[in-house]
Image 1 (cartoon, rainbow, N blue to C red):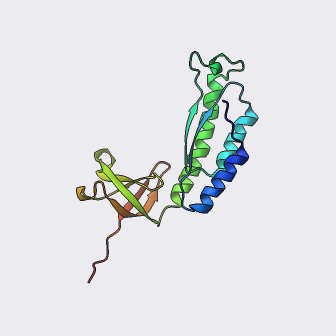
Image 2: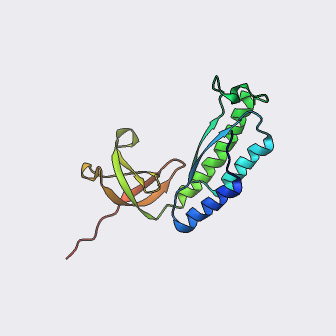
Image 3: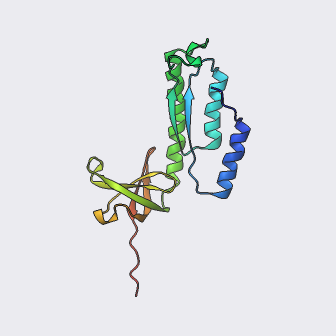
Length: 170
């Protein structure tokens, strides 16, 4: 895919980010099944996800685009193999995402309140500085504001929490 960075360069960058911003959230985008991708290369991708412990990853199976060099390449990966790899990778990514989100339980995070979701049991929602989705009970006065939320539960895709009550000042 003409990527010019090496895994070592990514490792150095991720380590630097985590050194400078210990609570950083790091995500990635991954495509599996690019023409000519070997099983070993695919497993290198899986192992990189495990090593780097991404908070989440957007994943997809390669699909040829007419008129692109890749669409004309030999060694196209079968649809069956692409989706087998994608499903395996997604399981790994989701396990890591759940573990990373579970580490948030008990922490207080600043959340920008974005809206209200009737489908999610009438919960308000917002995002942390690391772009993690958080659902919580609130009121319309919070919309557009940053509030402190104590995280109480985690799923693969989001967090649940409670608005922290500010101590009354005397």
